[in-house]
Image 1 (cartoon, rainbow, N blue to C red):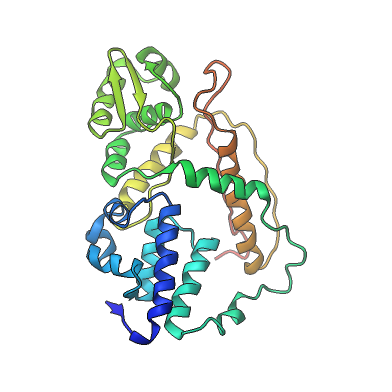
Image 2 (cartoon, one colour):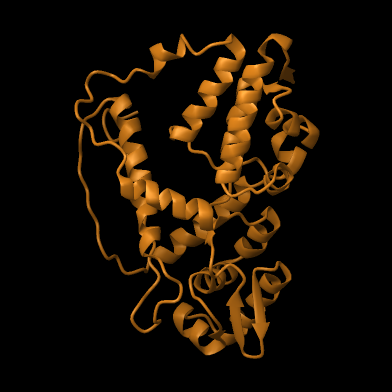
Length: 294
């Protein structure tokens, strides 16, 4: 299952250090917390001690296993963190990163493309400080039906106690449905109740997307279906479209900028805003390959 070579010990430790640091930056305070949140051995296909040995620099995973670990961490395939881990991995295998310089050189077509803006770095810091990961069990409880999902969604983005009347008016669900939906959310430690009021236990945090693993795939599909259903009747605020031809190398660069641009919305987020003067918005960015047709 693992590659093991005494000659690569130092570089394996460097890989483990990078993996441990990125795991923390992704909102998992401990290796065990990440392992359990990702679904444990059932999803990752290895025992905790095996993963722990990776972070301690004692072992390296097979390449396909590293891809699954990055997905479970929520590290995007084309992100700087993914590239850092892959570089550290292959450096541990070969003993140097000399050959990797050949692959890391950008295509010459990308002239004077914008570099990462300071604002993007600031937003990334906000996310790393306030981002949290909910357990698979909590996501399952929330994604069970659309009433639960949207009630939790509203409470999660609203600071303080929310009356049942306000929750019903915001979601347009009937009081009976809302009260029924809140019970399992309380049991999952997502929401707390006080008489006729409810509040989210994550109101001050930025809940990160659920990592993709075999166990979480159905949950993520349910979440996506709930949101797609909800936005069918949502008020569209703004749409921008642009068709361009670009190389794969330039697309990868642009994807990083787009991800940061979407994350920039978090800098304007404040769950304590006056509820009469604010609303909850979904920021969505999608890239389609339209031609040539596959």
